[in-house]
Length: 201
Image (cartoon, rainbow, N blue to C red; front, side, top):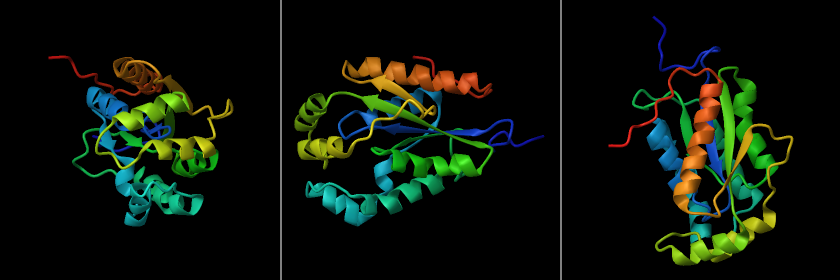
């Protein structure tokens, strides 16, 4: 019998990157989707080297050179599948602000027939996210980082067919449900047999 925990050409692994500027709700919404679809969740910020974390704590924006190693680590983790993972698939948070960053993350999918990389872009105006950054407590990424990220942001273009947009300029519960339905739709549309929505208790 085939190992159902391993990807195959006919049953590929999907990796969903939840993307967007700081304070758009990446971690909250990604965890909601992962928990409700029983998919393994990874916090992309955990892959940053300490030097990057120190810069962000100081309110300094990361540059392309800072992000190269971080993006490569996330790309390389796309195919890593330890036995304790709850699902064949992965949900990962990553700002992925520029097209070139998304292209790095796409490399795993391009190199392996049994891997599909998809992006969920969480969309809201800059002023909305700046206010959210002001309101949240104990997070290293503040209002100034929101502005610096919008300054370099490249919105996904119409040719990026692997991206879905979710409006998060509304109550968080609505964004969570919209994102979950879009991820579930991509999995079920692929004929994936292992989409299980957690039942409310």
